Length: 201
Image (cartoon, rainbow, N blue to C red):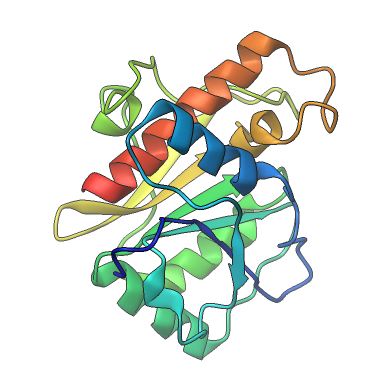
């Protein structure tokens, strides 16, 4: 992974009809949190790229979001697998409706394993802020928030937030005005933890 320049988070541009472009202000606000709350030197805004982009390895962390279908090409599957096996990290945020296709595509990336539930005692929930688990930010259909992961050589390389919608609480405040300051703070703390974990493990 590239070093020296300020760290940023790349948002994955995928095919399949899902709205990969959602959460337009999330990464900007996430990076600001990292600059102001941690000693991470973070850039000002997101980068958008496809998984086959030759600059992929410049970004230690990827963000994938959507409401609907994801479809990766075989080249994208191979590129993501290689990236994750060589130090990269993917955070996927279920914006409601992502679950079925995301699980299907991750099965193609790592056919030998399935997404595993991440216990509330896992380090990702306490590596910077002490959290009780994945916070529920947006209600959607009322299902409990659940974190899932994929691992390579003992390292979690994919963290998937299901039925939580962390991005909802990271958007500019006027995007979701019903989110309380308390809910937004939970989203902020979880986002900081995810980035700190990704950059240190």
